[in-house]
Image (cartoon, rainbow, N blue to C red; front, side):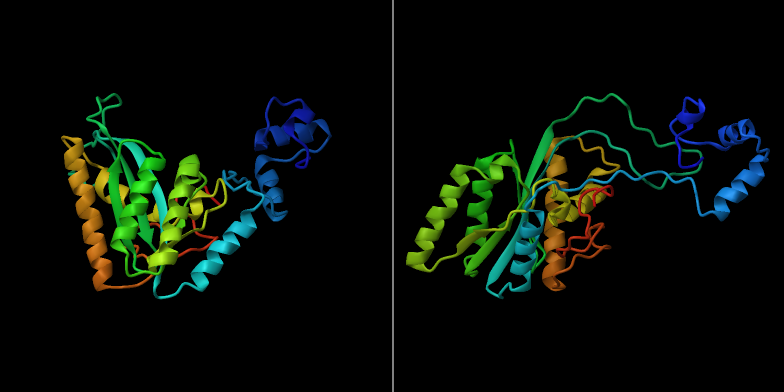
Length: 283
């Protein structure tokens, strides 16, 4: 009976409950109490369990792209850098809730309807070997901003012979304009010996593999949750300080993995297929 839906027995339900099981069994001549039904179900190994919603990548090249990223990281040289790149936002600056310590008898509340003080978008890159974040604020998510980030990474990492850029399948990460900028840089690199650029795109629909998402999550919990900044500029100052202190910490305590205490990141800052850097529902 448990292998059949309740609708087969005339119940307008999609899942069984003990009352319905008892009634259905009664129609077949089997009389059992709800306690006995519960015991039989448990002894047979059945249990009521809520299904988890999981998000996965449907990219047919998932394994190849993942393997390419892992291969690059396995063979990354000391004079090479691997950057996890993404955007955070747009996020509205307003009073936000979250877990906080409150005095006895105090109820923390957040108005359902608020007037936003503005929005912000962060364009950022996380270098996995040094755990350093490069970031700035953008008006939009587009190729122009990614090229701007690319130029900034090149300017700040002239000591590297090669940098790898890893990102999700957003259209502005795969534009012709960006491809031309990378190609022109590499032509110049052949002549001058400057830094080359290689891309290591993530599989489509696999943002959960993007390591920088862990940093964004830690920043949001530390800076945005329970916040009530009077302006966008105040929010930006808090975010800037967070990243500056985070970078300073990892310069003094160099390691490739993130620290769950510092920044409160949900996962370590290393690349793993099993890691979930964005949302607990991802697999």
